Length: 190
Image 1: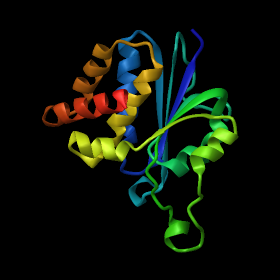
Image 2 (image 1 turned 135 degrees about the horizontal axis):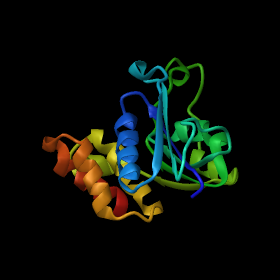
Image 3 (image 1 turned 45 degrees about the horizontal axis):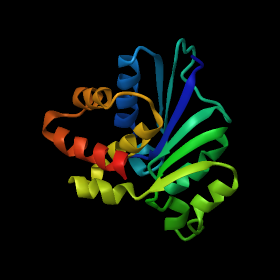
Image 4 (image 1 turned 90 degrees about the vertical axis):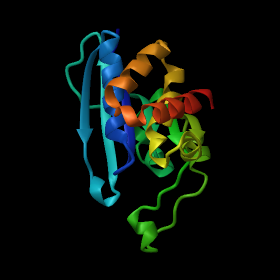
C-alpha cells in the first residue's frame, strides 16, 4: 500500500495531540506501519500547531511535504486555509467551521478572511466543513471538538467502528469515555 498522509492542524490547546495519538493507535492496530510527528508552534499561546500522521506498508519519514497530504483535519477554519498548499490535488479537508482570531486580528492589524470554505473549494480542494464546536457541546464538552473531527474523518476510512472505539478506549481517560464516544458518533453521523 502506498503511504497515506494526514495533517492535523489547529491552535494550541484544542486537542490535536490526542487526535494524532488516537489515529496512530488506530492505524497501528490495523497492521499499518505508522509515523506520527508533532510539530509544536506557539501552542501555549494560541499559536498554530500541526501534527503529521503517515501510514502504509512501510513509512520511512514522519514529515509531510507540500502537495502530499491526503487529508487535512483542521480544528479552525483559517488553519485549514493556511495549510492548503500541503493538500494533494485530490485530497480532502475535514474542518471545523469555528473561527479563532489570530494575534494580528486581535490587535486590529488584520481582518479575519471571509468566505474561507468557498475560497478553498475554488482552489480545487474538497472541503467537508461543519460546526464541530456545536456538536462537541451537544456531546457534553466544548473540549471534545477533536473527537467530533475524528468521527467525521472516520467517514473517509474503510476501518471497522470497533477499531475506532478501541482506540478511544485506549487513549481517553475512563471518566471521559462516554462523552467522547458520543462526540465521535455525532461527528460521524453529522
